[in-house]
Image (spheres, rainbow, N blue to C red):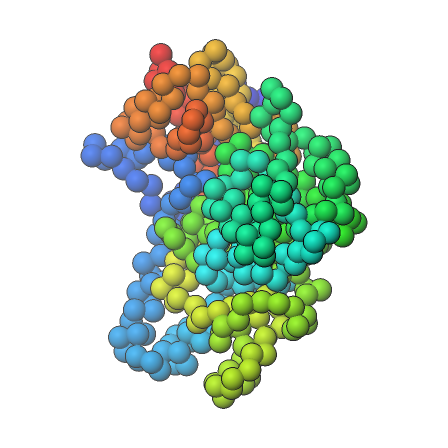
Amino acid sequence: MSVAFQLGTAFADAMDAQDSLAYFRERFFIPTGRDGKEWIYLCGHSLGLQPKTVRDYIDQELHDWAALGVEGHFRAKNPWMPYHRLLSEQTATLVGAVAKEVVVMNSLTVNLHLMMISFYRPTVQRHKILVERGAFPSDQYAVKSQIRFNGFDPAQALIELTPREGETCIRDEDVQQMIERRGNEIALVLIGGVNYASGQVFDMKQITKLGHQNGCKVGFDLAHAAGNIPLRLHDWGPDFAAWCSYKYLNGGPGCIAGCFVHERHSQARDLPRFAGWWGHDQNTRFQMGPDFHPMPGSEGWQLSNPPIMALAPLRASMQIFSEAGMESLRAKSRLLTGYLEFLLQQSASPQFCMITPREENRRGAQLSIRIAKNGRAVCEALTAQGIIGDWREPDTFRVAPVPLYNSYRDVYRFVEHFVHALQ
């Protein structure tokens, strides 16, 4: 859908009036200031807002725990033994997978470690890991620790994709050339599907194809992709992917994470892995035998029984995603972020520039704004006014209009306040 954006509040209000997804905003708590006015919250890339039904989902489990104790595992309204599977179909739909390929478990970095134990199998000839420079620090720490764990030196074994001089994002052709040129050295390609700092969306389909053609395993960190852009993990074919659920997925701070393992590995019971009893064959789990027999599919990588109170809030949000549909959300997201870009361009100034790709298919909801000087002070001044984005050192202000709960009026007001704060 192409729209000719216009200046002025009348345009923003008209767009909100015809927005078929606008009513989903009423399904979330919007934080307010001491004056009772709603904040302009453009920080869903960091922590999503709370769905209003979260308390109901949690209260149900608290009630069953109080009433049933341990019997809640079998007799709760939603028995806890298979509770994590209440999210399997919705999660699979969200990331473009089949149900047996996904599981909600652990936290993101834990899942990345579990995946690397299985899919980073270095040899003397092929032991390098390809990442993007500027990947989220936890990913960098995890990757380097895995390299050291396997007896190699990150200084030699880590290959970083880097933007060209004077550019802020990595070109697709540079990714291709790197994999083709050094693929015989690379054991694992591990890329953030959407870079946390720049907001760049990588061509995951092409990266997977190139990686596999050159004998590499391929995985993705989807922390900033899940719930932000449509994904087709099964069709694209990466070996694995992992994501957190507290950003665009609105599962709450520190919410349980998600993991994908492609179905071609579903019966690979001899694949090296760290094991725990919840990944053991459910038919014999309670025979308490000494030998581990993994469940087929992604569930075979589970370690411990899932935390019910962490799963319940995510169910509330995933229900909303199921109703809204990722394609519809993406269509609105393109417009909201395009409108944000348009308004910022109308206020162009040497004081700031946008470092996120201009092309719609190379970005999600987020725009990253580089501020020439006093950027943290600008961010803090906006926060004091209830205008919420987030600051990333040394010079980047990240904002993301989220289609589930942000409006065109939010975007208009943000730019108005942002330009004033710069002045």
